[in-house]
Length: 60
Image (cartoon, rainbow, N blue to C red; front, side, top):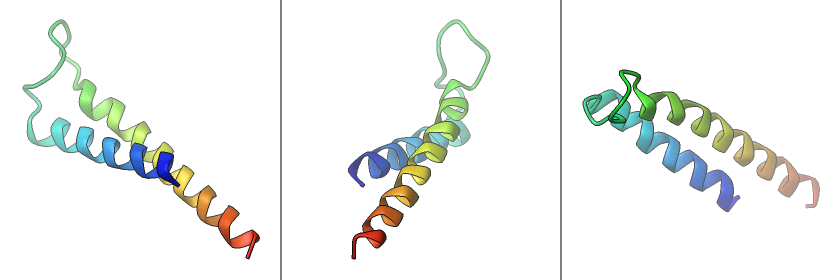
């Protein structure tokens, strides 16, 4: 559960930075690295939360 929350929060922060402050990107690239790395982090975090919830439900 903590890993899922961590990746979800960091993913949301990176997506927000990519959407609302696209000028804060890596120095040598035109790509929006915050946005492109935030989306998989958010997906991974949500997947971890779902798996943690399913695991907790099976032990009850």
